[in-house]
Amino acid sequence: MLVVLIALLGVTFAVVDLPGRPAQAATTKRVLAISVDGLSVTAIEKLGPGHLPNLYRLMRGGASTREARSEYEQSVTLPNHTSMVTSRRITRSAHGHGVTWNTDRSWMTVQEAAGHPVSSVFSQVGRAGRSSALFASKSKFGLFDRSWPSIDRFVVDGDADLVDRAATDLATRKRAFTFVHLGSPDHYGHRDGGMSAAYRASVIRTDARIGRLLKAIDSSSALKGSTYVILTADHGFKSGATDHSAHLYPNYRIPFVVWGPGVARGASLYRLNPDYRAPGTSRATYDGRQPIRNGDLGNLALDLLGLGPIPGSTLNSAQSLDIR
Image (tube, rainbow, N blue to C red; front, side, top):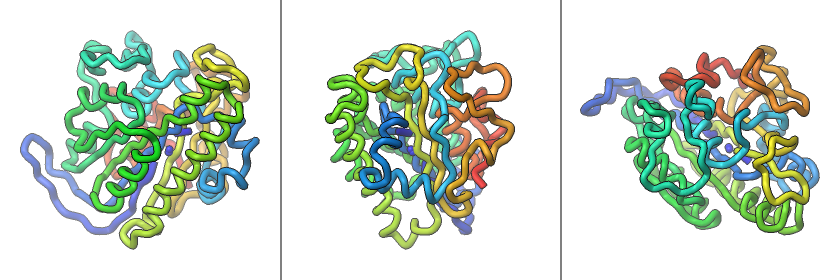
């Protein structure tokens, strides 16, 4: 948010004291995360701004990289999205969240997978007395709703209706954090192969849906000019392949984009963050300087909201990812 995030900068402060939650300074800041399931960087580059005007609007108007990485262990949907919202790696024995499956297990929670309590961006927003929502195109994201009851609204729907519902929610609800998962490119990649005609068409439709979310921001005096967008993905797709689980470039290659007021326009995130290391074509481990990963998302969102990092997190736990 391909992944995408949005944060709103405000100046109005109030004290919120909800039962069971500490009093926090509540502002009008908001964050929207958009994850585009299976968004190939190759598709972004091949289709270009003529077919993907909204993605290119975000990249040209913000800071980005086309060489971010999925988690080292797996380049599949549910494990990587769990990393996005927990800012943890996958492997349970290495302080990870333990979600290694990619199916709808209605009896499981992230806490059960990890064997101990696991916080998330959703739980941290809730502890601050603020509201969050999750809009997903796959029912297996019910894992998050079960794991973090602080999510105030959870919706599963097809991409087109999902975006309409999310756009309306953005315009009418004062959510601190909204996560939108768009699954169409992944569907057509599995069915017809990465970079197939059907896959490319789904990426173009997805770009238009991202435009629908941007229009909701542009049309709101409360949101326009005070909104950050961060977009990423869970994995890429090799051209012609119908599977992305193998540890092959470009399966683990993803975009990461941050857009909004004060963000360095047209800048490379690696140039802004010399403490991170661009990985080339490699599948970077967790040793040494890190690439920008989709798992950085959760702590970046909280940083934009003026909140501290997710307890127990290991990705961007110092909230050091710079966007200006």
